[in-house]
Length: 395
Image 1 (cartoon, helix red, strand yellow):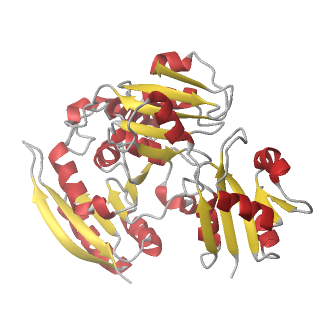
Image 2 (cartoon, rainbow, N blue to C red):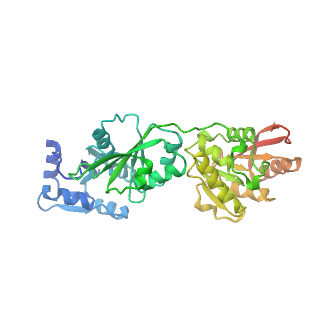
Image 3 (cartoon, one colour):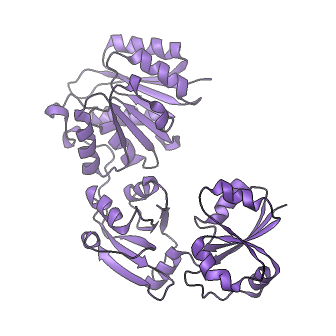
């Protein structure tokens, strides 16, 4: 069985290793790590060692590992904290792994600030999209620890927060932690935008004010299509629709025919874990979705403009929940497409405003392989009644 010893080190190579780690280093000959780790550790390695650089593509790195029974890997901080030990576990689940951790950068930042961090929500933006950061932000976490990269910088993060109305945080930034040139600063978000930061860095966001997160947004608060209040899903219907979609247990939600984006915005606000893709044929929808997302603090909704039935859907996360808010006379085709890609148990909800569309959905859903499960008729004020229908994808 292949065995990995994964040793966490600091950023200046001054860590004093325990006796067990020193023995592992002196009795082994195959070592690995990033180029920076090599510069820090090469003077401690025994004679006639073999070094394997960890570079992309990782497939080539693991091909080199295959030639050896035991490999000693050096990694930054805690190798199990968004670190290389996780990569080894996922690629070689049968391998034996022994980890010798050091402090990770966010721990070090909390120590410098003397801020308890047991309640900190940790997000990595290192080579990752914004999704988990947006999730923590919308949820209003009191402390958010963020691992950055050269694209997701403190300036980019502060800019995103201010764009979507999350000014109620102060930012603590740790630069070059563990080095003699390290610096820790605390700033308000507008000040961050005017500053420069050394890399590598990490940061902690500390909440100073709680943003309103309404459950059920009145339709008159949304930016509307040409000011037409009738071109929006009314708040009670919107909430009923979302309840039928069972979004607590879903991962990817598609909103087809989003118009103002009210359903997508409400869904993201209440279920920030969702990956939401919203489709609309009208070009005006692009600006409306952007305005309403910024107004209500829901970053991360992917807007797609064009005919849904002609779009390349393979580039978006496969949906396990779909709301059809508009179909442009192509309901049958839309249901056929969805039936071909949705997993078993996926949910489609449709709001019918006429007897004709009601019967059409019933007929075409069954024909496409869905099972009708629920119907609920609702009337709001003096508007015509709407029937909310739910169908589930079957094998």
